[in-house]
Length: 92
Length: 382
Image 1 (cartoon, helix red, strand yellow):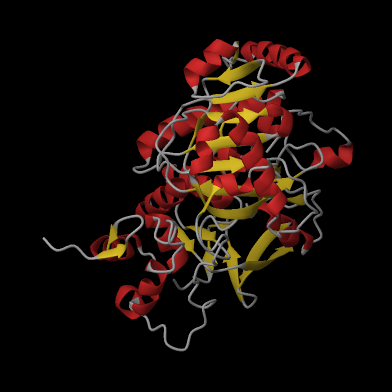
Image 2 (image 1 turned 90 degrees about the vertical axis):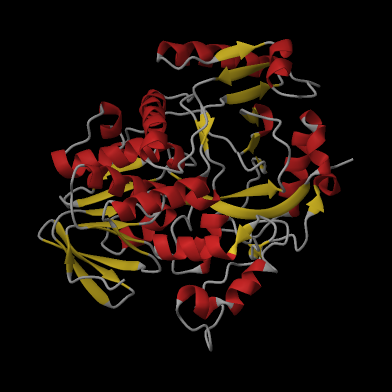
């Protein structure tokens, strides 16, 4: 069976995303992120959150056109940009 | 969701306290409960905390309330599908003779209140966690404590409340409360629409309670104390209890996902949310001294959340003086999430019975600051 992975880091399928949006009345990306951990893996959301933005009308039944990232509640990027080994921060 | 002209219960704040209040009210059959959250559920301190839960405190009020809260956490994980509470304990690493002496006394005190903490020798610590002991002399172990993933809490309770018919209004900031004749009459949402409130208004908005209450001339002694936290990539499960390095106020906890959360005492100016490199250095340097295996894992994110701190590090819970239906719960000083179940139930009691059930909750009233009857606590860290 073919599976469409929307979030590779956390292995979340498109089907799971559509299911929680519908069944739990989720209307925004921030809540979706915390529900399924989308955007919380090593990619920091650079792939999955962008995919969600591209699919916004299909997922949330609303149009994203012309709306700012604030209006769409796009999760903020938190540092670091890429995962860094903890030994980088150890005092020697 | 369109908000109606009038509601029975209005809860301001979609964090753990507000959600638990709604839950216990709805379970008693109260209808027409509305939660108003300025952003998304858990935007404030709940969604940013490490998820530790313990009753091993140094004040009667905290110990007794947290014992009650832990018994609620144990039932909540049966009542709410998806909610996680793992009773893996807390381990306080002690590195000076003085700390060991203090914690022997602390353990005896906690035992006298029914919290079965005990002092562990070096060998016993090594049996419990894969640790490089270095300068550790002994540890205090609290088997009653545990951890509860805040994210799982948020979505599982959200789902449960929807089933129970509670209305959750996300992205709906409450900007004012209108009071007259000794009662809260309505709340203003989105700076424009007034919603009448027939029953109670609960202000459970964490650090933002201060702003809302100041609008109606109620002053509360609350400081915003920013605290950093970091999370790593998923790591093999290796550490069950939440481990605290007491001397430096550093801690590490591994949740079910495998991610490690590491915090440390790193004072910054009030309300300053600039992320500091020094925090990362301190947290990693101290924790890797005891758990060198963490050095090979990756830092994923770092963020800041607020402790909302009162002068005596104890919460403010109760009816606002001279406003019979306006209830506040804030000032948890870093312990709001762990206390949310018992505080939610006590707010339910205040609303339905007119007063809380436990004498300890009564001690948390706002008036204590004006009366100079401050409570005492010595074990705040992280």
